[in-house]
Length: 66
Image (cartoon, rainbow, N blue to C red):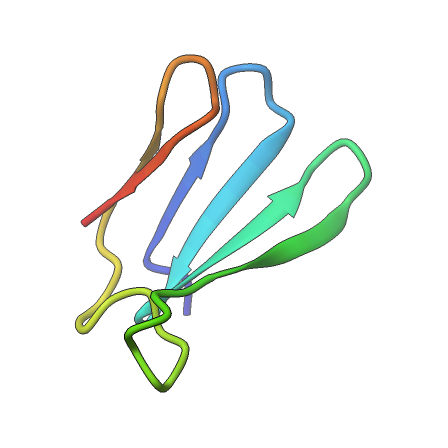
């Protein structure tokens, strides 16, 4: 299941937190952009625990997760 979601203010991108991974989608083209992962995590997860919150910066260039 998806535990968290955030959208850029312009509505172009959405990020979804599922388990310990973050998935990014381009809403304008309805395409999957990619998965955000920490290179230090060998399993590809972006977090060691569940992604419980996501927020884009006002200009949409940064994504914070917790």
